[in-house]
Image 1 (tube, rainbow, N blue to C red):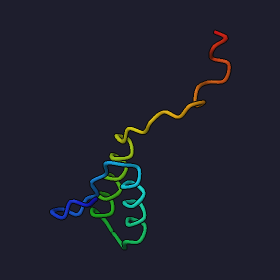
Image 2 (tube, rainbow, N blue to C red):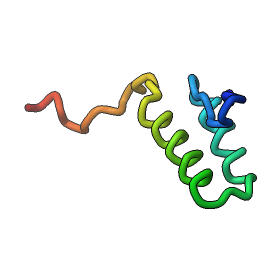
Image 3 (spheres, rainbow, N blue to C red):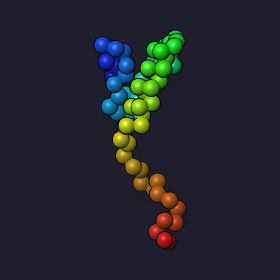
Image 4 (cartoon, rainbow, N blue to C red):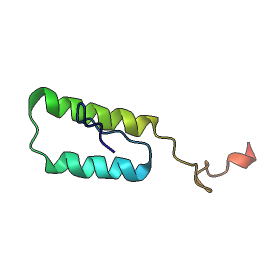
Amino acid sequence: MHNRQNSLPVVRTANDLEKAVRKYRQQDLHGTELFRQWKAIRDAALNLELPAGEGDGIAGEDSY
């Protein structure tokens, strides 16, 4: 889950993302390291491809 070279989280799954967030909250980070960790988690969350759930469509979309 973490790249030991620079300690930024490597997120491949939703479970990895949750673990990274838990660890982030437990750490006492400051300054640049705080921002680096936050940005890595944010970018990973935005890039994570989650399967679309059934029923997540717009209500009434078939009426258009």
